[in-house]
Image (cartoon, rainbow, N blue to C red; front, side, top):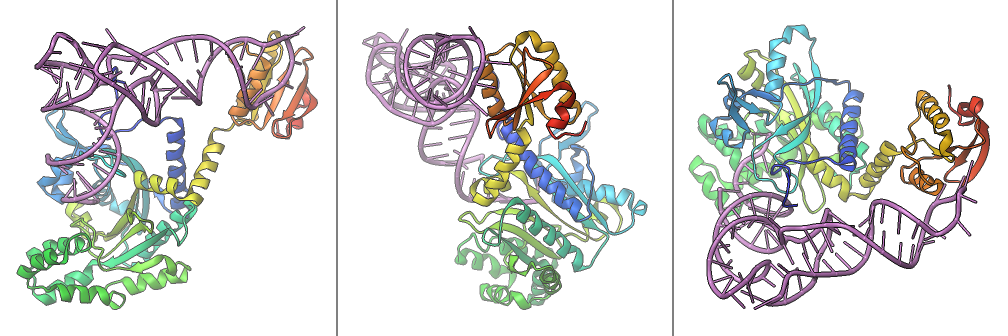
Length: 418
RNA sequence: GUGGCUGUAGCUCAGUGGUAGAGCCCCGGAUUGUGAUUCCGGUUGUCGCGGGUUCGAUCCCCGUCAGCCACCCCA
C-alpha cells in the first residue's frame, strides 16, 4: 500500500461494482429527466476562473481547482454548472422556444477537505427550467425531484421537500428596515438559525434592527407566508404529492443568487442531510450573459444520495437488482472438449450476434470450473459444446435441467430471434 | 483552514522493546464432461513514510502523509 500510487485526496476510483452503482443513479436521473420532457446538454469541465468569481466573489477561489494554463489564462475545473448554463442559455437564447427544460449529468471539482458525503470530485445532476416565471416551473422541478426519489426506492417515510421562499424574507427585511446592502448578511443569519445557539443568532440580528422573536414569528406562520409557496403547493397537491412537501421558511440556502422559492430534498433519518437543493434565480442569466431570462433549477450530487440508498432497505434492494442485471450474462458457453474450441467460438459469436451477453473460458478449463464460472457470472443458461458437436446441450442453471439442441436450432431453442 | 480518532498481508483485524500471526479472499489439487460442502497445498508484508530515543523500534517520542468523523463552508 505504501508503494506505488494512490488517488489524490478526495478523488475516487470506481471499481466495477462502484461504477455500476454510479450508473444506476445516473440511469435513474436520466430516465426521470426524460420522463419530464427535459433534454440533455453538457458544458466544458474547464472554464475561465472569472465565470465563478463574477457570481460569487474572489473568496471562492480557495475552493476552486484553478491554475494558469499554457496560454496564460486563469482557468478552473468547474465547481458547479449553473454559470455555464447561464452563459449557454444567454448566448443562444433566440434559438430556443421558451421555456427551456434542460438537464445535465457531469463531474465537478471543489478544493475542500473531504468528509462523509463530500469529496473533491463528485457527479451532479442539474435540472433547470429557463424562460418561465410561473411557480408552475418551480413545482415541475419539485415534482421531478420527488419522482426521482420514489423511483430510487424512497417513500414518504424516508424524505421530505422543505419548501421556502426567499421573497418572504426579503419583504420582511425591507419592512423591518434592514438596509438593502445587508439583506444578504441577514439571509445568512437565517440560514444558520438551526445550527447556532439562539443567543448568538439574536446578537447577530440586533445590529440589523431585527428581533429573534419576529424571525420565529414569520417561520411559525410560514404556511401563510407570501411568495409563491401557495401556488407551488397547490400544483403539487394536484399531482398527489402534497404529503412530501413541508413548508419551512428556515431554508434559505447559502447561495446569494436565489431570488424566490427555494427548496431542499432531505432525508428524515438521523442525518437530516440535504440530498438535493435548488431554487429560483431570476437575475443570474443577466449577470452572466446580459440577457433577461428568469430561471429555476436544482441539483443532486451522487455522494449523499448513494450513501442514503445503501442505508435504506427498499432503495438498496433496487440498487442490488440493478447491479445484478448490469453484470449478469445470459449464456455461458461451456467448452467440454477442448478440440471443439473453434466450433465453440462460432457458437459464442452467433449468440452475441443475436444480442445475448455471452461468456466462455478463454483458456482450457475443467468443466466443473466452467460451470462455477457460469454461476458466478450470473448466467441463466449454459450451452455445452463437446465431442458430439453439432449436437449441443442447453442447461438451465437454476433448474439444473439439460436438454439437447442443434447448431441450426440453437437460437430458437433458447427462445431468441435470430 | 481547525480539531479528535486511526494507519500491520489484497480485505477484516490480532500481537510483542529482540525484525510478525489468524480468518476471509485469491491460485492449484483431491482418477478422465456438470455447479455444493469438505479436505490438502500455495503466494503476499521495507508493520504508512521520515526522523529521534535505545545495544536493538512494528511497539516509545516528534514530524509528515493518508483515511474516517466533526467544525468552517457548502455553488
